[in-house]
Amino acid sequence: MIKLHDKHFKPFLSEEQIQAAVKKIALEIAEDYRDETPIFVGVLNGAFMFVSDLMKHYPHDCEVSFVKLSSYQGLTSTGIVETLLDVSEDIEGRSVIIVEDIIDTGRTLQQLVHLFSDTNVKEFKIASLFYKSEIYNGEYTIDYVGIEIPSKFIVGYGLDYNELGRNLKEVYQLNPSHMINLVLFGKPGAGKGTQAGFLKDKYNLKHISTGDVFRFNMKNDTELGKLAKSYIDRGDLVPDEVTIKMLQDEVEKNPDAAGFIFDGFPRTTAQAEALDNFLESKDMKVDATIALEADDEVLTQRLLERGKESGRSDDQDVDKIRNRFDEYNEKTAPLKDFYSAQGKFHSVNGIGDIAEITGRLSKVIDNL
Ligand code: IMP
Ligand code: MG
Image (cartoon, rainbow, N blue to C red; front, side, top):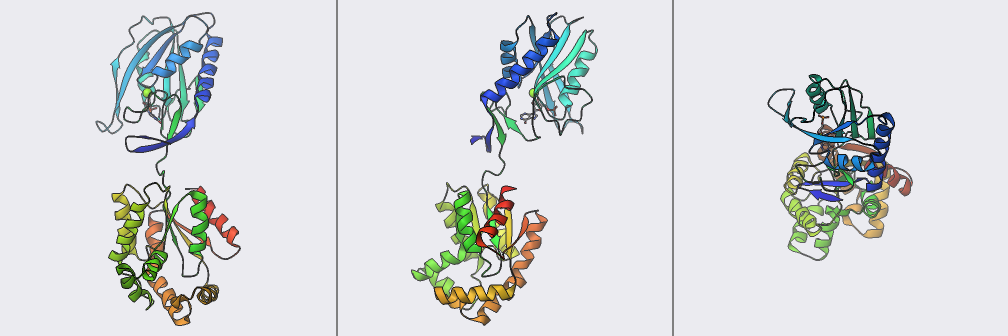
């Protein structure tokens, strides 16, 4: 993983893969132009490295020139591409091969073709090292393609992100969410704690269970603990300011975490908004909210079992359990709408084998 400006990029194409693609193009062109001397016209700045290596792999005579184009956005609705440097060589009657680093929408290419439309070139071909075929909507065939790639932003080997990354020998792909931040929710007893334990190992995440942190504080009789105890013993929720403060401490204590699993928070829409604000201030976000679903009968049984073992007061009393279910239905269920509106809500069946449930959760995470 590398960082350029504010963005993270992950390895995408190795030096070997790139060189193999460059060589392939060089030999394809050589095959077609064995009897003449083509002019390669590189498109600056991005193509400088590609042109250089292409020349090294080209086995016959050839000439080379460059054009520089610049895309401007916001000046017109379609955007315009301005020529900053014209081809200086006499290209009348010659075969020209445009050498592009990457073809995306094809807008730049359109302008290039226009540029050559007034000239009397014999033949006009296009070679591009990278080609985003899914997004290309131009009318010209790309004659020589190195590697077809998905329409995700890449850097390296001449390609830049705000001018950085051009010097890299390999190509990296934008990794917009290098962190995985999850919110696990479900009624008490749904298995959030158990599953979070597996997920944190599997994905190298830090599990923040608000309940566990409160219980730790209560056991050690801290200020926060005493405060929290008065609410939890009644089966009520701890006030938001207290909880957010605690979360903040936990996140700050773990700057190297690959992400966080928030378990037990948020429980209300107001808390979800507070969490979004807090994460945004840290350049983070919630990537997915996963609800572990199970029905009340199953959950009540599980909780009573757990209460017998742990001695947790709120797990031993059916009325307190009911109270927490009601609380969940009333306040937490609207979170489903909140996160659904952001396209982040996922529901997972929480009944079954523990490993099986972990598998269901992993499937959601792997698809993020
Ligand atoms: P098009 O005009 O949409 O085909 O875009 C082509 C130009 O956009 C390229 O010459 C690059 O300068 C830039 N570009 C497109 N995709 C990428 C990318 O993934 N990384 C870096 N620059 C890109
Ligand atoms: Mg370019």
